[in-house]
Image (cartoon, rainbow, N blue to C red; front, side, top):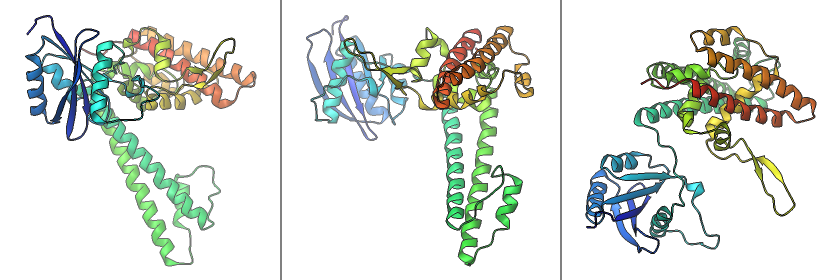
Length: 370
């Protein structure tokens, strides 16, 4: 084995097997299909050991997907380089209409050798666990929304429309209890829908408490607390942003973070024609969503509410100054955009984009706990 030799290995992963392709180092090196192996850790370790006898440096890559990051961590622990690739950024030939595990593995190996692949950020095991917890809470909240929607659709079909100001209050629940139907089966349907909503509410509350308790002892807890100095960024918004984005210091500039979140305009220009369209919507959907939800709070004049004042206590002075500067600018920015005739949705997207920049600035001032 040449001590300066290297191999680039493409892995096409699935639930039960992994297709492996190997590209020799050098521009004109051979690219060949190695074979299929089982996806269990023992088979992976055996494959890595055999390839390590052929070259001194091994460079693995595979697409990010449902199989997670365990394969990445195993290869790293074995002492070799590995990269998890963003599927949406893999170069593809427009005329290529054949897709198989073998062809994908060979293509990954070749592109990895050429340096044409873009890796994704891989969280550590603790970060990934907390992210799973936050996503479980989000799924529970989605189930609650769906249960409420099903009840409202049922009542609409039966001609019962709530005329109060806000649903799901005590007054609204008393109104539900007093409803009357001609057929007994409808009372059963109503009771089942209400029970499903109550169960979903309990589940959301339980998971919310678990998120708060778990984050308190997390290394990223100082960052989560600092983000809450911003208006429109309470605990769940801050936690969601951190678990999905990680440490914002990995972005060199705020515009890089904005682009990663898909909050920058897309463009289709050619020759003398310049055409800019809506935002790209690339990157992390969950982080973009919570920022847009938080941006709606900047419709109102700048002020420090009791809730924000409580969250500001104990935070570094630079963080408090950035948060207040954000309020002053973004509240005025919203009024300016609406005054210029922009749609509310367009103005809110612009506010969310600038919120990301201020969060990036706060992230530069507060480091994760050691």
